[in-house]
Image 1 (tube, one colour):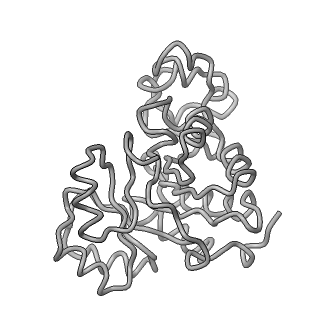
Image 2 (cartoon, rainbow, N blue to C red):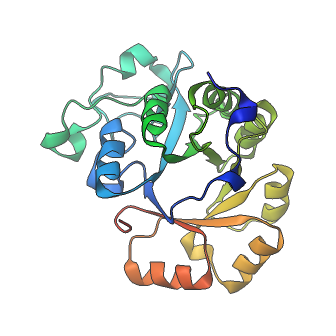
Length: 249
C-alpha cells in the first residue's frame, strides 16, 4: 500500500478538460464499474462519482439516500450493509443491457483507476448524520487504496464537516468545495478547508465570479454542462474543467 506522502500532489498532474459525470453520464448506469469502463471506452480519462458508507462502514458508490431509483433495493441506503448492497442490481434501471451490474465498492473503483491511471473526483455524499464519519473514512481509504503514481483523487463535497474531516485525516489529498449557490462566506469556507479548487453549478459562473476564484488561487470546475454552446461560453470565460453527462470525448 502507498504511504500518504507518495500520492501525487494536484500540481503534479494535468487533468483532462472533460470529466464524465458518475462514470459515463447518461450513457451507462451511474456510479457502477460498468459506467466507468464505458466512459473509458468513450475516451474519458477523468471521472466524477458519489461516495457514501454502507451500514457496516464500507465506502461504496451511490448518489441517493434511498435505493429505489438506481438499484433493485428498497428503502434507506443507511439500513443496508455491504453484503446486502453487493447483491442488488444497479444496472437494469438504465436498460436491459446493463442488468445484473452491482453497486461498486470504492476499492473496486480504485483498482480500475490504478490500472488505467485515471483521474477521479470523489464527491463525499454522506448519509444523514454521517458527514464527519464519511470524510474520515473515505480519506483514510484513499490513502490505502490508491497506488503510487496514480493521480490522487480530488475530494469534493457540499458539506463542510465532511471536507473538514477529510482534511484532518489526509491533509495531502486535494479538496474542492461544491456549491449550488454562492452563499455568504463561501470563499472563506473554501479557504478554511484548504481547498485547491471549487466546483460550481455552471449557472453561477460569470466573469466576476471567476475573477474572485482566481484571485484566491483556486481552480474552477463546473457541473453539469450538457449543451455545447454553454460549454463553449464557459471555456471562453476560462473555467478549468467541465463535468458533463453528454459532451466531451
